[in-house]
Length: 107
Image (tube, rainbow, N blue to C red; front, side, top):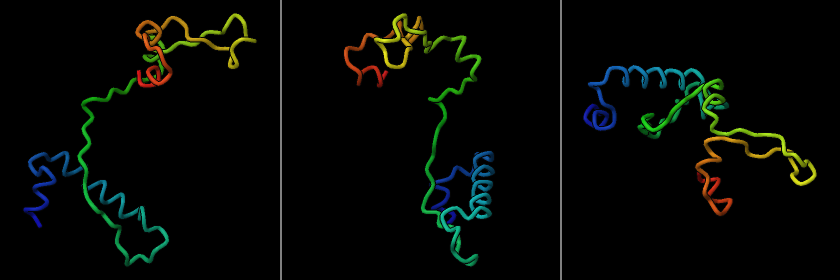
Protein backbone atom coordinates (compact mmCIF):
# COMPACT_ATOMS: atom_id res chain seq x y z
CA UNK A 1 0.00 0.00 0.00
CA UNK A 2 2.82 2.38 0.85
CA UNK A 3 4.47 1.81 -2.53
CA UNK A 4 1.18 2.51 -4.34
CA UNK A 5 0.48 5.62 -2.28
CA UNK A 6 4.00 6.94 -2.81
CA UNK A 7 3.38 6.84 -6.56
CA UNK A 8 0.33 9.09 -6.10
CA UNK A 9 1.23 11.29 -3.12
CA UNK A 10 4.61 13.04 -2.81
CA UNK A 11 5.53 12.14 0.78
CA UNK A 12 8.55 14.43 0.66
CA UNK A 13 6.20 17.45 0.43
CA UNK A 14 4.94 17.81 3.99
CA UNK A 15 2.33 20.49 3.20
CA UNK A 16 0.67 18.28 0.57
CA UNK A 17 0.45 15.36 2.99
CA UNK A 18 -1.02 17.61 5.69
CA UNK A 19 -3.56 19.11 3.27
CA UNK A 20 -4.58 15.67 2.06
CA UNK A 21 -4.95 14.45 5.65
CA UNK A 22 -7.14 17.45 6.46
CA UNK A 23 -9.25 16.80 3.37
CA UNK A 24 -9.75 13.15 4.28
CA UNK A 25 -10.69 14.12 7.84
CA UNK A 26 -13.19 16.69 6.52
CA UNK A 27 -14.77 14.16 4.15
CA UNK A 28 -15.00 11.61 6.96
CA UNK A 29 -16.72 14.04 9.32
CA UNK A 30 -19.10 15.48 6.72
CA UNK A 31 -19.71 12.03 5.21
CA UNK A 32 -19.84 13.50 1.72
CA UNK A 33 -21.39 10.99 -0.64
CA UNK A 34 -22.84 8.73 2.06
CA UNK A 35 -24.92 11.17 4.11
CA UNK A 36 -27.97 8.89 4.27
CA UNK A 37 -26.06 5.64 4.92
CA UNK A 38 -25.29 4.07 8.30
CA UNK A 39 -22.22 5.31 10.17
CA UNK A 40 -20.44 1.98 9.68
CA UNK A 41 -20.30 2.68 5.91
CA UNK A 42 -17.09 4.54 5.13
CA UNK A 43 -16.76 7.40 2.68
CA UNK A 44 -15.70 6.00 -0.71
CA UNK A 45 -12.47 7.57 -1.93
CA UNK A 46 -11.94 6.37 -5.49
CA UNK A 47 -8.75 8.24 -6.23
CA UNK A 48 -6.72 11.41 -5.93
CA UNK A 49 -6.21 13.98 -8.64
CA UNK A 50 -3.44 16.53 -8.53
CA UNK A 51 -4.61 20.09 -9.25
CA UNK A 52 -1.99 22.77 -9.83
CA UNK A 53 -2.79 26.44 -9.25
CA UNK A 54 0.11 27.76 -11.33
CA UNK A 55 -2.09 28.92 -14.21
CA UNK A 56 -4.79 30.61 -12.10
CA UNK A 57 -4.91 34.11 -10.68
CA UNK A 58 -7.26 35.30 -7.98
CA UNK A 59 -7.90 39.05 -7.84
CA UNK A 60 -10.23 41.03 -5.61
CA UNK A 61 -13.03 43.31 -6.82
CA UNK A 62 -11.04 46.55 -6.42
CA UNK A 63 -8.15 45.25 -8.53
CA UNK A 64 -10.61 43.91 -11.08
CA UNK A 65 -12.27 47.31 -11.50
CA UNK A 66 -8.97 49.23 -11.60
CA UNK A 67 -7.55 46.96 -14.33
CA UNK A 68 -10.67 47.68 -16.42
CA UNK A 69 -10.72 44.19 -17.93
CA UNK A 70 -14.47 44.52 -18.54
CA UNK A 71 -16.41 47.75 -18.26
CA UNK A 72 -20.06 48.28 -19.04
CA UNK A 73 -21.51 51.66 -19.94
CA UNK A 74 -25.07 52.75 -20.51
CA UNK A 75 -26.05 52.61 -24.16
CA UNK A 76 -27.14 56.03 -25.50
CA UNK A 77 -30.21 54.47 -27.10
CA UNK A 78 -31.79 52.02 -24.68
CA UNK A 79 -34.33 51.05 -27.35
CA UNK A 80 -31.67 49.44 -29.57
CA UNK A 81 -30.06 47.24 -26.92
CA UNK A 82 -32.22 45.03 -24.69
CA UNK A 83 -30.07 45.33 -21.56
CA UNK A 84 -29.26 49.03 -21.99
CA UNK A 85 -25.53 48.33 -21.55
CA UNK A 86 -22.63 48.31 -23.97
CA UNK A 87 -18.95 47.42 -23.66
CA UNK A 88 -16.98 50.51 -22.62
CA UNK A 89 -13.29 51.28 -22.89
CA UNK A 90 -11.69 48.16 -21.44
CA UNK A 91 -8.89 45.70 -21.98
CA UNK A 92 -11.37 43.23 -23.45
CA UNK A 93 -12.67 45.87 -25.89
CA UNK A 94 -9.15 46.71 -27.04
CA UNK A 95 -8.05 43.08 -27.53
CA UNK A 96 -11.32 41.82 -29.00
CA UNK A 97 -10.80 41.34 -32.74
CA UNK A 98 -13.18 38.38 -32.95
CA UNK A 99 -15.67 38.17 -35.80
CA UNK A 100 -18.13 35.79 -34.13
CA UNK A 101 -19.78 35.36 -30.73
CA UNK A 102 -18.03 32.01 -30.14
CA UNK A 103 -14.64 33.71 -30.46
CA UNK A 104 -15.69 36.44 -28.03
CA UNK A 105 -16.81 33.89 -25.46
CA UNK A 106 -13.56 31.98 -25.85
CA UNK A 107 -11.55 35.20 -25.43
